[in-house]
Image (tube, rainbow, N blue to C red; front, side, top):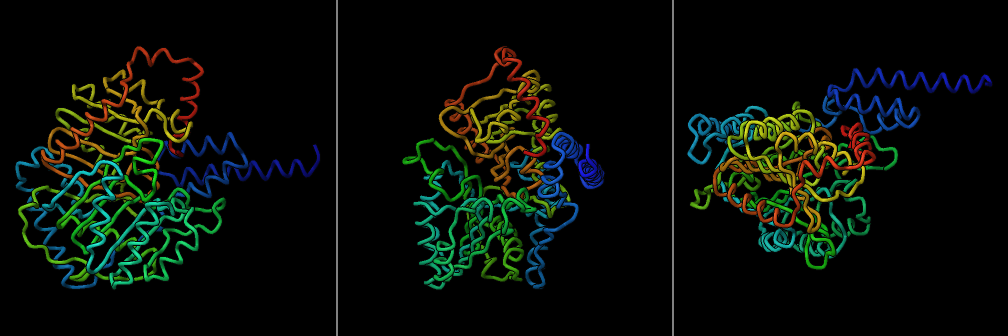
Length: 481
């Protein structure tokens, strides 16, 4: 062996060793740390490169410290009053929240999530979402705020862009955030047309060199629309023709939520925090962004907005899902397109099933990644053994991210049940209390089961050893998927 080869080996091994030490000190999640350490050991040169590009613990480093700074005295007092009202509701909860005060207190204490009464409408699939959204945008008087992970320049994207440009020309303030990675197909010409028409549009965490980006994992996965501070939408549906059934060759099953009422204030605050971070501005709350809302008899649904991301001290959405599962008294129904649970969620599902709860999990027959599909299936055996009922959606692709517990809790969010949503991405969702939304979500869930096949433990155990090995190997990289 020549001297230069020896020197190269010394450099490679030194880099690997230093990377392993860095992973141990920088990564507080043991599963994630072990995953990256395995990657570094098995792929000496590429492993360290991948870790330093996408594996740095940004929550610990607070690189996205973009909390909304409210300096308006009136805004502070109004928000303080709503917080006090939320605390009072939790102390003496209405019947609609029976058994769910732990969840409400968690969100209030961890992230000051307001608990308010609203009108909440469940929306199934993209064709129904856009049928409601476009007329609402057309009626906007003061502002339209949009935030999407995926925004494509296709038929629905062009239609939405045309409407946004028309409203901007009419004097409506239109602000739009798109994720630079999820919406990387947007052309400069498309964005220029929006800006020339008066639409303020900014990317989230712009990527200059995609293959050398340090934040590919830390993406804005949120889907939020706000109209005049009174109407809001969030859920799983992005702006793309694939989400609209009809011309789409693959049936796309998704779920979204429309909100009217003070819960929109919470969506607005999170949007403004994201906007100020992305645009470098300091927009402060005022009466146009947070308009006074008169009492409305339609405001019968108790709602909290939950959000999480690398700028949060704790994984709020993961803790909320965990709380919903462990506190369930009778049933837990989960729909998710990507299922790679951490130990806490995995154990919570087992505990709920073993204690006699009706625990059901609906996932796609096949995800859009063979590695993700294999990693997801590696968890099925142990869950089936504990009594969890697992269904694979066969009609098309199920992209909904929902959870219902008992008969008074429903969650509709942008977050999947995986490490990426819990640890790496910015996510948002709504927790809706009461039998109304819970019942609607349960009806949708049982309808979806009609287009799914249930897995049996006996059949699952008949898988080939080759398939089992493939799944077990994929699971080693679960914290990285």
